[in-house]
Length: 265
Ligand code: BTN
Image (cartoon, rainbow, N blue to C red; front, side, top):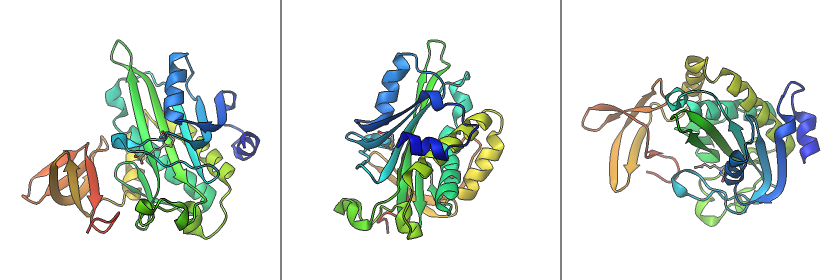
């Protein structure tokens, strides 16, 4: 797999010497976090064929069977304050749209903030984890991405069969996972080069890809559910929502459901 990924990588990709492939890990994000403690450098990346403990936002598990998906984590160590990375998850999501477009020939959408979608189905997700140093500056950012590549509908567990999709289900064609993996690494390298200097351009692209804007949504935070309309994504990547009582607020946490998607009616 490693050789096939390197075959498809751009010749200018600079982090080949810190790329690791494993047949099986618990979670690529967790393994990378352990490598940070050993001093892993900027650009270190891990891809696993399968994960036994893959996880996503809000403590949810991310089903990661072998031979069908790409489970990738990459480490960035930008020298900046955490407030300069408010748009990080948006930047990764837009980069992953670029990667899928390059490798599979179609551009997915983004369900705010971190789901890659096509039609009403989720193709993948992103989990970003930030660590700070004693001065309160960024020590590490771990960007974990899972993309369903080759699954058929019946490959998904019954409880997610109606909401999960894969690149092959969208294109009707066989998907070369090594090509997808290489496109993801290349897109992440390009994103890293623009992250701190091109925030506006990154967010403009994110807004074009984000399917949540303009939709009726519900926002769930703990026991509380609030209904509204998504108006925009602000300069920090927060979702601007007009709630049913008319007041407008930027939300940065909680689960946003879009009417008509993922079983929400
Ligand atoms: C989500 O949908 O909430 C995010 C899912 C993120 C899954 C990826 S797969 C690679 C990396 N390792 C993990 O344990 N999680 C991320």
